[in-house]
Image (cartoon, rainbow, N blue to C red; front, top):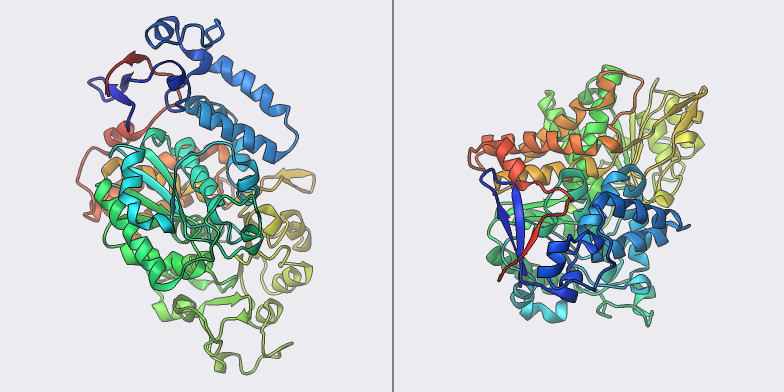
Length: 569
């Protein structure tokens, strides 16, 4: 049930909000609560007199107090819990605080700390946010959606938590990644938090530690698979499409075998997007394109090794191939420039149980028949590097420090300036530490990481490490889609996002600069990406031709206190 109604002025700006809530109920509503920010007239008409300390504070004064409280906390997980509680109590203040200290707090509410919070979900749980739809409730999905809100939702982030970051199956704790992603949408692209919904699909877990944990809050059952799973997902999507006519559905951290399957199943039926595949491919391709600017080379000239062959790796590889084809290669020649390794070494056609999307990049035994191999049964990363002489090395393996000194120095023997992207997160899963990469390549490496790392000291100069963070991609993509009410996400729209981020790279002004913009520039990047994506959606015929600037302005929200009045909603 919706307890408030937004009233806008003739220019489309929020004028005030009407609410039927009073007293303690109003203070318990995180969308509307202002804590000590309620002014005198609001306290009278909304039955708040005596329920708050008498001093009336500005939101800036509240931010100062909250930041001092935040600084008193010694561990990152304690800071996460503090911010999560603030989010659940006063959403506007949460976004104002984190927005004012974005570079400092982004690693707390998002990667890498959110990974630890997800692992500890059942221990640190305090208050629900979003929806939990469990398999045993499969016949009540429509009722669950109806009970949560009205139909004015633009964006859903949904997970089944089988492939959380680099830590795998985390069961019901996946709700925190959905909440975190939506927070980033708002922080980076000003998407209205009143109009978003995090959803955790609880289909069981194969994480035995959780199944054995008496405190585990999810459905204690092995993950459902096959037709039962597919029917459940179909029931969920059908209910969502029926309830929300213009929804943008964002899939997050699904498993290797279901992520691509779910996206492709509904790609041509609704506006849907998988960040692990598509968002990661956009930002990684932008980092690589920026490296090409530094090197003054073409992408189609590169030899690329992927260490990791899951959802993210194949998504990135697909986008790279698309870009190579645009440069004139055939799709066959583009794929021939990519070498992919999984947990069993180089992906070859004779490996059993490889997925359909891995087969695209599988090599024949004839191609490697003259290689000198350490182990012919499992062709490892070092052997592949020795034989193919890659110019770009991408890590999606979640194997900590897989790019060791021997790997990196062997690569550097054959390329003047190696491009190395250790993308796995959280930080503990990163394939390399940037300071090591600089040291082992005599400072010649071009690097971007998945997790945040401190600046690197190069010849007495502090060098910022570019973070290949999806937050540069998905918030702007989402804002553009929501603004023009796009009916589909086209490949051209994702290409537009990639090209826009590349155009904003610092290397366009200084070739010694990091490959990607700074976190502090996220809002500028997101807005520019949104305009490009919206224009492309209109050009592709999946959105009506409207005034994009006005549409984006109408879709954006600011963390400020709006006047509250009594109303019946």
